[in-house]
Image (cartoon, rainbow, N blue to C red; front, side, top):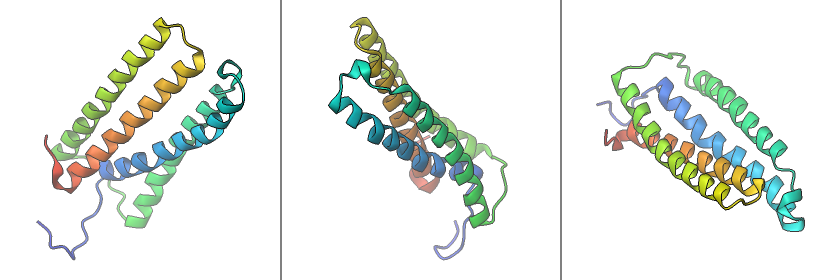
Length: 150
């Protein structure tokens, strides 16, 4: 184990987890900032939510890529190889994200059965997907810092 004052470079997986843990909540917050005021002042059936959601998803994708590149440049580590530990940590985070996604799928299915407005179905799926992705990334970061349950 490296002493506390020695630089330990971030692995590719850890850089990706960091950018995901930051950009997904930011994109989701952007969606909520645009859509919630609309939903408060007009009926949800009239709220234009698909465009803001697509913009939030696009922002998240582009910001994640740019963030990973910038983080690699700042840390001066351009290695994209993965070892067994990286693969295990990635799978660990993916399993956690999958649980939230599965809960989201059940919730969305229930909303569809109740025939609620598309706004609620789309927003619920989007938000629970964002929560799951963020939880998965945070779990990966914790694992990289020694809290890996495996």
